[in-house]
Structure formats: structure tokens, C-alpha cells
Image 1 (cartoon, one colour):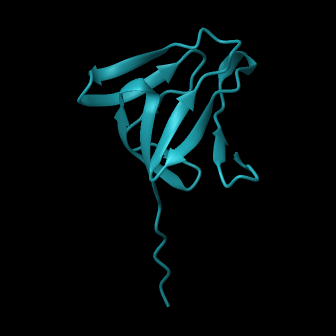
Image 2: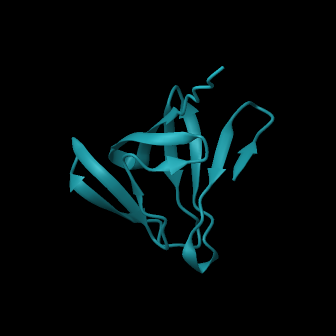
Image 3: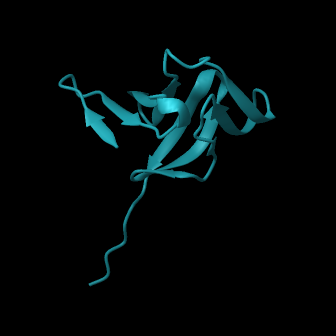
Length: 96
């Protein structure tokens, strides 16, 4: 689910257990920040080698987010420390 703000910022809602409303908030370029629901523990597991080879992150209640996963029209290209994800927009090839 994608929400648009009037100041051109975007926010992507993530499905999670326990009615948590985790989001990805656009911070610029291809970068998005994981913002955990304030009612959750607000922590997430890091899978991979911190800080240079993070393969996935898993916030309290989910969802498990890993490199290569698709979110809406984006694919996770990389995950950086502090819950920063690089998302790339999928390019659809239309054949004539």
C-alpha cells in the first residue's frame, strides 16, 4: 500500500503481525528508511554481516525484508545500517 504526502514525500505501509504499522519512508534518491510502529519494540534483527553485507532485516512482527524482495513496484537492491533500504523501481518492458 502506498500513501502520498502533499510535500511529495512517499510512505509505504508494510503488513505486519499484531496490528503493527511499520512503514518505509522516502528519504531521497533511491533510499527509504524503515520506521517501526511505536507500539512495537521498535527493534529489528539484522541478517548478514554488519555493516557492509546486510542481507535482510526483520522488524518485530515482520515483515522479513531481504535483498531482492519486491515491495509494490520496487525491488530491494541493498540494505544499509540504521534500517536504510535502497529500492529500485522496476522497469517494465512492453513488447510491441
